[in-house]
Image 1 (spheres, rainbow, N blue to C red):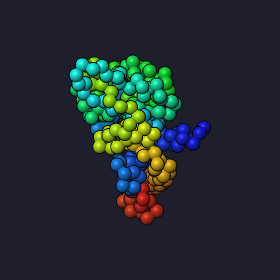
Image 2 (cartoon, one colour):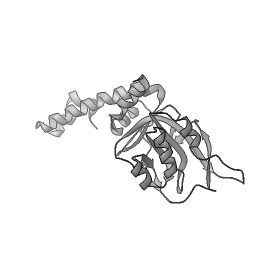
Image 3 (spheres, rainbow, N blue to C red):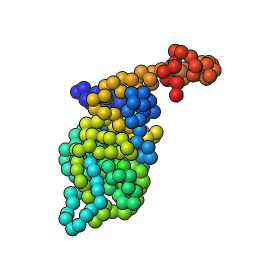
Image 4 (tube, rainbow, N blue to C red):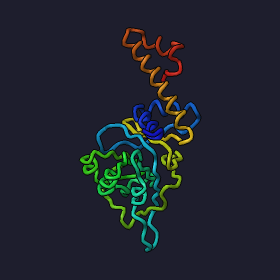
Length: 220
């Protein structure tokens, strides 16, 4: 396994709360609020971001099919990240895209906006994170503007190659140049929290655990 995929696998064993706490401690954006899982297996999704930006269609010029170029570039370990500016009245992801993504080994998609065909995605075991589900088609309403360029997801700047972790608590993005540092920090935090949990199970009062200097960095 190459180092890139090894780091992704380590990230996938963490939870977004631990990663968010480490990002917060480093002065980095800690989460993209309001985005949640709408399909899939319930397992966390971790991978490298491939970005797509979507904009309203203007004039009669044909637009590029949303995310098709990004899917052509995708490889194992990737997660599509689509910036539709939080728009929830029109879908920018559907069943055929979920099928194509599955075929390419894409691990999931994070949509700052709405999606549709969630039953199809769930049947495929493909996880879609989005702000909303709506049946309204993208056709004639929105088009792809860019792919592979920086985007903004819930006020968090995301570039292709950054790491993504999404689970039942939400979505976090880890800048590529800080990924090893953040993952290692979140692993250490998770170990401390497991120690705190063991102490509580052993009968130590929670107030004592939360104020014990042994666990100070983990208290949250």
